[in-house]
Length: 329
Image (cartoon, rainbow, N blue to C red; front, side, top):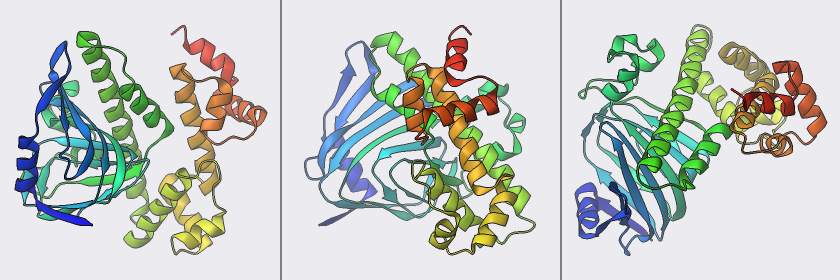
């Protein structure tokens, strides 16, 4: 069954549901149960500070829901991190283990399409002024790659979809399992929300730099297919497809994929995958929440000894020594 509803009617359903305080020590931490007509679960919103909000969505949607959304100005930068669940709209198609960035600007009229599903998401919303406060409140001080995220409300907004990195997933579960209340909780969650935003922004800078390098020699359609190939690759860390199989999945020749991938990212396909795994391993080791074997398994190395050799070659220390060293800094 498909339920089609206007945004106004959806908001009226929301208003009809009672909003309660989730944390008895924090009046700015509230929870709203979704209407029974739509399914089970809740939305939890935490206003961390002016211009910074965290939302947790944990629902089981009974039917497919399509929300008709009018043209809407959007002042915030929003980061949707999907652990489970998917949705599709005019701008993005986001699935399991992916995240989407929505810049400030104008949402044109569109349909928000969400299938019958179990969804677990974390959304961080940050005002451009709050983001720029880390650089003296000046948009001009942001890198060129990040300035494109902040647009006037009459200009169509910027979007990006990319796979969740293992480090992002680790931070997401830390948020969901936060054991604190009151001020300790607020400080912890603010730090984690900003960490998620920083990881997404750093990835955005890297992607846009790659786009500029390739724009002079590759067609836009080819660039899009190469990014699809990278997404497939990073979603299959444990069993990556062969170069030929990957090329076939994105309708490119293996030669074009090989050449274009190197132009976009400065590395071969599997050289990129190898370095990506090791960088994610480094970040996971620094958290101290996983041992070396668990980290190796999480990023797709079947052999701990091979992982240790590769890690030492790249970072100059074996994984265990690196992790112990970081505990003292």
